[in-house]
Image 1 (tube, rainbow, N blue to C red):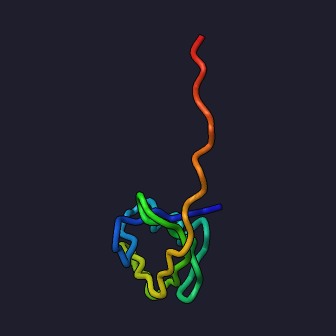
Image 2 (spheres, rainbow, N blue to C red):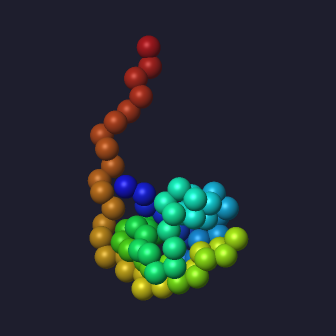
Length: 78
């Protein structure tokens, strides 16, 4: 699952790597829905309103689900 992480109350994606990933890997366009998450908060969906070279503007942001529980994993040292 691709989940784009955003700062609290953010309505746009400005991180160059995220913008590139959304445009070139996910091949998302205006009107498409993205799975998003607020850092330290809930996850949900948002619709792409506008795309340019440096920013993706979002609308209809709905962060209505709690994130999944952390996996019970750790690194074992020898």
